Image (cartoon, one colour):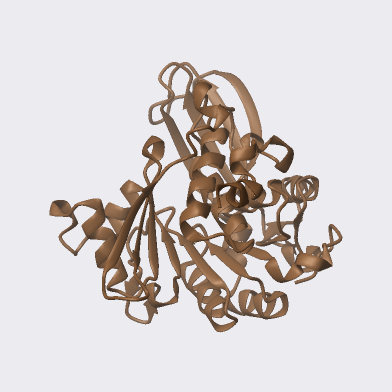
Length: 344
């Protein structure tokens, strides 16, 4: 993958992360009352933000400054697309401009209306260029880039997301699937579209776990039982994000038939623990991006998850998604790689 926007650090290019996913321009209106059908209401404030789950995760990973991060996505040749790519440049997310920008397709947009009193919201996502990316696009780019880690979500076409995971496995990369948004009207094991055998690490939150396990008797299963059921379908590890409770790692023990279950959370000495929570938007994406970055550095899954919980915990102390993600300079000692060596 060409890195048209920045110069890669060649010494760690073999640790590259490629995020395959969506990038959207968020258009956010705040109002004291949400409109009913046919009603027009006046708003309080209007803001814009760079979003899309794929872009969020790429920005979260790149902000840590540990390894090169590339974004495989599509935007339109419009003001929104230019803004989204300028944002990538600012945070050192690499992309191939020649293939990323599409002349005849609008950029993806999320129109968000927020009730200023309750915080309730209504969101309409128009995928635009996100749905113009093809299986061939993904295969060609990943074979050229040969990343160490491939990260995928479900805001692009399912067949394109699946192709990214397949190619990732072919080239020996760690494949990560964040099941957000959870499938509606299809499943991760539809005939001819079986995701699980191509996933090294599956990352759902509690709600998504329940949805993807429908049909397995999930209404009567615990989170641990659902995660174990997914292992039986071919996933190597399931990492369930649990919000303020941290995360649960369920994985097969390579030396036996036993299944290991581990609960992790941010380090106890994380300074952000003492700060108030401001906004949880994008915290799951912060977790996924940080996990990929630490794994690419050779950190174990368990320790990477601990660090990722810490990064996500820092992100919720600020307002916004991408604007809340910590940089390398922001990381306290407990989230730095040196802390592993000291503990050893």
